[in-house]
Image (cartoon, rainbow, N blue to C red):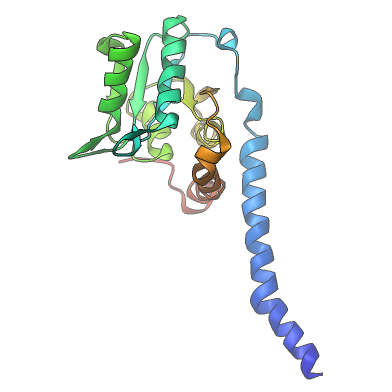
Length: 209
C-alpha cells in the first residue's frame, strides 16, 4: 500500500506535470508550423504583388571578431528580393541600444555590400522581438502585404503572429545556417513558439501602444 501511495504521489507531482509541459510544447509547435508552412516560399518568382520586405533583426556578430551567419544570410535574402524587383521597400526591424543597433547595422550592410539605396530601407528601432516587429509593420508602418525575411526556423512564428492580427504575409527564408552553428537558436525557437501562443491567445499581447 505504501509503495502504491508513493507511485501515486510520483505521478501527480512529477510525471503528470512533465508530461503536460511536453504536450504543451509539442502542441504549440505543431500548431505554429502546420498553420503556416504552406506560405513559406523558397522561389522568389512565387512572390506576387510587390509586398514590403520585413527583415527580422539579429546581431551582426556572435563574438567581437566573429560574424553572425544568421545576420549575413538574412541580409543576403533581403537584397536578393529587392534586386530581383520582388519588393520595392524593406523594413529592417530590430533592437537598439546605445552601443548596439541592429537596424543601423542592417542598413549599412545592405548599402555597402549590395548597393541598395538607403531611401528604400526603413529602420524600425522598436522591433525588440518578433511580436513587436510584425505588429508594428501593420499598425505603425501601415503595411497590408508583407514578405517576412528571416531564418528557416524563425519565419513560421512570424507568420503565425501575422495571421492573428490579420496581416497578409508570406515568408522567404534565408539560406540555412549549419545545424551545429545554430543549435541554440533552434532550441530557443521551440520555446518561443509556445510564448507566441501564450502571448496571442492567453495573455492577449497582440497590440502596441
